[in-house]
Image 1: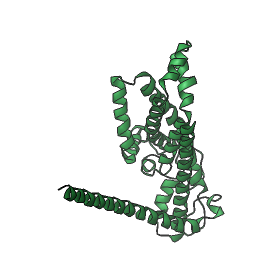
Image 2 (image 1 turned 135 degrees about the vertical axis):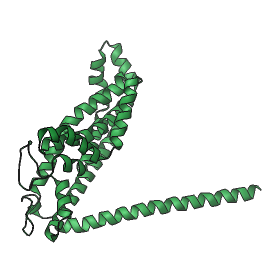
Image 3 (image 1 turned 90 degrees about the horizontal axis):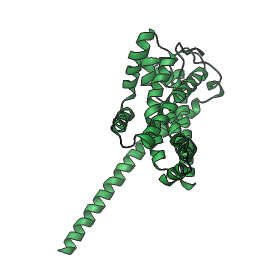
Image 4 (image 1 turned 45 degrees about the vertical axis):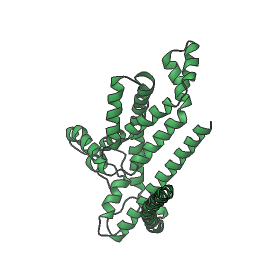
Length: 281
């Protein structure tokens, strides 16, 4: 009886292990196919004019300089807006209202924002910003991206502050330091690497978002620094060029997609290095 039971369990174990390996291989194969196609098409589309020339009209040569500038500018504004809000909210959840009813509701809303489709955030900002203003703008696009940044920073900040040992807080409080000084001088400093990691992950999250910008900023074929108007940006430019009927625009779309992929990869690697540094320190 024991031998039959052991053989049955060993068969089930091997079957489930084989299914798990097959599922992992299936997913990795599609990921390798996507990345391989992107590298193959995007690498041959890269050239110095990608970084020096404006987006072209169909049938002419050009680059993505204005789109790169617009994406960096709007992402930077979104991070400047979203990071302080996210850090302060995460600090409240971890340090002040950890077990309060309000903290529970904030976590609930934050989880919804983390899992909400970005197109819903674009529609929300469209209704509260674009419609009253009467036109699309980089301001509205940056606000939409900031709404995506906030929940990522909130969750990371709270988790990193909860990892700080309570003994550090108690030691600072025993010296007579007010709670606000303890947070600024002890807990924020101890969790600094983790918080920065969360900000980098938020930047990686918004760098390729297209749907919110379609409802808030749209696109601009020319170089512009007017935040009250439409700015060129990589995600919408890639979307437009990929749907065009011209092969030269398709090549620029591949190049733009490769740039975003490399940017996200670099941010992710940097975030991993900061996280490993935090664990070893």
